[in-house]
Structure formats: C-alpha cells, structure tokens
Length: 275
Image 1 (cartoon, rainbow, N blue to C red):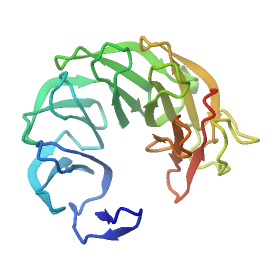
Image 2 (tube, rainbow, N blue to C red):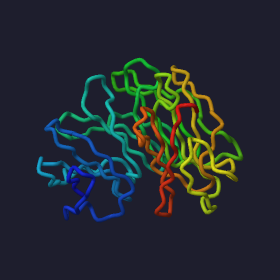
Image 3 (cartoon, rainbow, N blue to C red):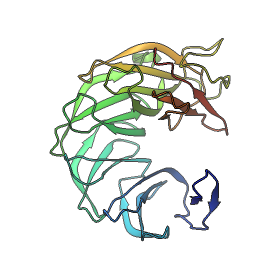
Image 4 (tube, rainbow, N blue to C red):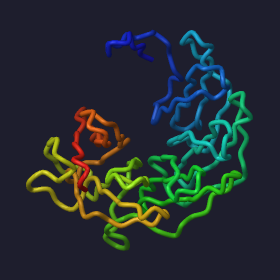
C-alpha cells in the first residue's frame, strides 16, 4: 500500500497484503466509516476483504469469497444501498450483498459462464439502477441489467466484433460516456494473439498506424443498453487488462488508459469527444 502526500507523491506504508499472488484490487468504503477498505482477489483462495480502521492500517476480515477469486468489483445492487461485491472465477460471476459492516453474503445469483477477467458497474439503461458489465475471456463483453432490488438479467448481447470460431479473447472492460450523449459506453480489451507487439501511441481514440483488428474496442450505447461496435481498434494484439477511463487533459471528456499484459507500459488514448 502506498500513501499519497496530496501532491501526487507516494510513499510505501509497509502494510502487507495477503501473500498469495494478487490478481485484482478494488477499494471502497464497505462499512460506512468514511475510510476506504480493500478487496483483494487472491489466486486460489477467493476474494479477501481488508477493513481500514481509519488510520490506513488494514485488518483481514477473514472472509474468502468466491471460488478462485480471479477478479472482484464493487457496486450497489440495491438503489441507495451499500457497496456490494461481484466476484469472478474461472466459470462465473458470483454476487455478494454487503450488510453495511463489510460482511458479505452470497445472494444465490451467478451471472454468465466462463472465466471472468474484469468487471464494471454503472447505470447502462438509464433507469437509475446500477448494472454490471463483465469481460469474459471467451464470450466477450456481457451486460446484466439490475432491477434495483438485487437481481440482474443478461441482455443477451455479446460484445465481441468476431464472435464464433474467430472469437477474440476478452480481458478488460471499462465504462464511460465517450461520445457525450449522456449514456455510458463500453471499452473492451481484446487479444487474439497475446504475444504480438503493439505500438505505444497516445492517439485521439484512434488506432496507431499499422494496427490490426485486435486490441481495445469502443462500443457505443443507444441509451437502453444496446451497444454498437464503433469500429475503432486501439492498439493491436497485446492482452489489454484493467482498462480505465479518466479525464487526463481536463477537457471534460474521458480518456482511456490501457495497460499491456506481461509488460510495464500503459497506452494512453486521448478522447476528442468525436468517437
């Protein structure tokens, strides 16, 4: 864990997390005490919940959630509720409700089939309830609509520009309004050949010269959670994990950060608000 001094400088706190390989980390206030807690996906032993005592010291709650604990994401299953948890494994996405103290209970609902690599929450159909989007390594991006009472329903749409025998592997997902039409769009990180090279080009959400049909894709939302492939291909064939949107140039629209799997580079794509 690294502490920010407020000027963008980080210092190692010396706080140790569980010692097994950490596949994914997400943070949020799970017990409503104003301090950010941590959920760590630990390979082979599920998602672990670490509670922050308010001083930056974390205590393992003893919970081990999900089978394998490949990836985890926080969102509100119930309108106005606490931060709940989706845990991905090699076969599904399992949903856990938070009682408001950071203690989680399996809802009995599992979403999708296959290895879940990434998850994101947001209101995708404009009904005021949070929905969940998952990047399944086989099957592409899938969207599950929340009813505001804790139940999610698959839309039936597979977000993958090459479904079927030529299907791409999907590793990353992120959501943001990339085209300024007041609904949330989806970015997907793909790779059909995880060992091919890609150019590190920070372009305006356009692919660098020579890019192929792999890499990141932008899918545009019609406002009702039906998505259309924009045709953009960002990067080429490196595995694109943990996509993140942020307004990097302070122009009011979200830009895209795309880390490359197996390396130390992050590709940055600036959004001119014209997808």
